Length: 169
Image 1 (cartoon, rainbow, N blue to C red):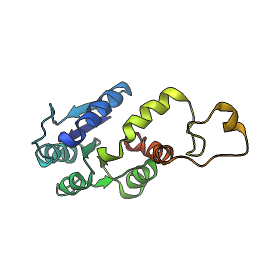
Image 2 (cartoon, rainbow, N blue to C red):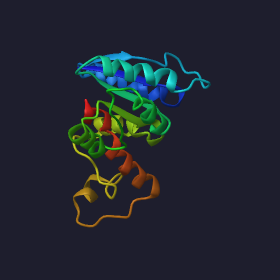
Image 3 (cartoon, rainbow, N blue to C red):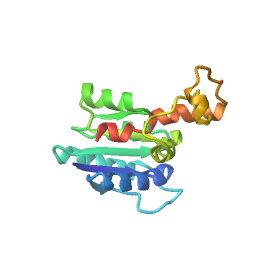
Image 4 (cartoon, rainbow, N blue to C red):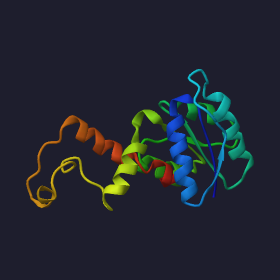
């Protein structure tokens, strides 16, 4: 599947990561920029051409990225034929695709889910609940759980966000 992707400086690293992952999964990725990190660039310059490419390329999908993903979604939705959805987790991404026929996914780099996803893929084949993250194997199997620390609970929430891009593609 062809996937058009674009970002400004706010999600440059996330875009690089997604391009690599989507290519490895066999998708044809068309990168609309940014090509290099520039703290002065702004998303419309990159997001609008990506959205226009999705609208003119039937069957393709798009991913637009930014700090929160809100502005990118708004900009992409200005293009006729684009149905952009902001999603921070796989549930919202799947619902947008299945029930709203979204053809562009907007993600915010602020959630940093992409880092959690790569760590989780290396660590196990199943997700960890926030109450067991960071505990030893023995306590994972016990009936008692401990209260997660704030970073662990946050990591558990971000873990749920990790597959948003792959849920749509």
